[in-house]
Image 1: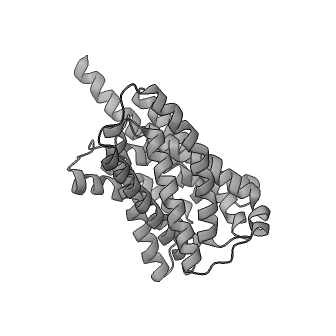
Image 2: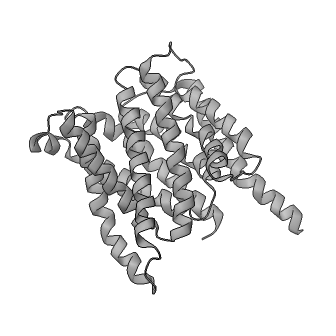
Image 3: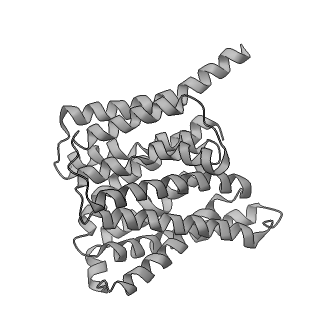
Length: 298
């Protein structure tokens, strides 16, 4: 798969996640945060596991060091859960605008984590592109941050978990060559962690509540969960984590667009400027390395 095709898959994942914000917003009217996440990723796991069987049938040789590989995939699932949990709990005490901006810090954190954990230095265009994308996310949040509270610091922590998850996916999926197995394992581990948190924290769960949120759960579970996160895993086999995060950040403008269409929310001129910044960041990450490569080979 070519790099531009992989980046297109990541862009599509961002679009699906953007629509997922609307579904999650309405779904929380019926279920608590951990219960919603538990149902959502149980559905996602059920959707992806059949593809694991298909993936295994395509490989003539069994997976090397299966226990170690599954352990790495499970680790991603645990990191994934903490990212979801800290973001959701943070929303209890911070504003949606603050949360949207602070979560977007993973655009900057991802190349930093890649350098610290794996000594994986990104293309130099990633650094200014990350700054431009961060400015865009800030504009999309309304260009205003209130005084920082506990929820804000939890949301910053969630951005660090998202960055670590993105970096680990980029490394482990290339090593294993099993994107569907990675996706299914991380969904299963995340769902189990969420169900455990639901029980321990005493969140009310009922089939009636789940039925009332059925459309939101189906969308976030099947499409924003099973489909989009699997696209992320597949796409990251052919591009770096630092480049991938620029395209995944497209979820912010897509969320604003779908919110305007479906919830009649308006982002205004500053929001449009934010979308333009994120688009510019994606174009820089996609075009500059290709332009330099052609100059070298010309």
